[in-house]
Image (cartoon, rainbow, N blue to C red; front, side, top):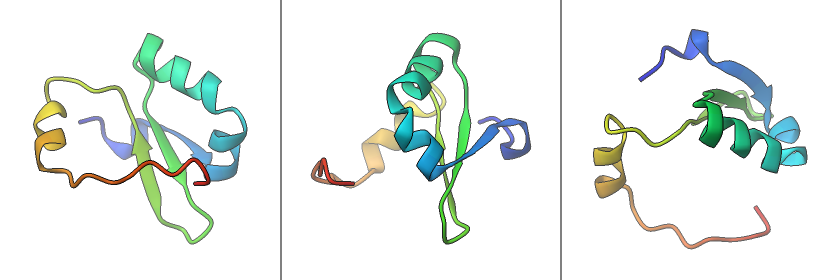
Length: 68
């Protein structure tokens, strides 16, 4: 996994407002984003690699909510 200091940091608002473009960069170029939320926490948006794939097996099923 890439070190967070090497990821491109954007706000959650920026990511949501241009979601399709960010996803294209992730899927096409392998770009990693650190998405900073308003409460100071962050999540990572990154391409699925062989290194990350096993994590999908242990993640709980979360129903999709388009309002998020």
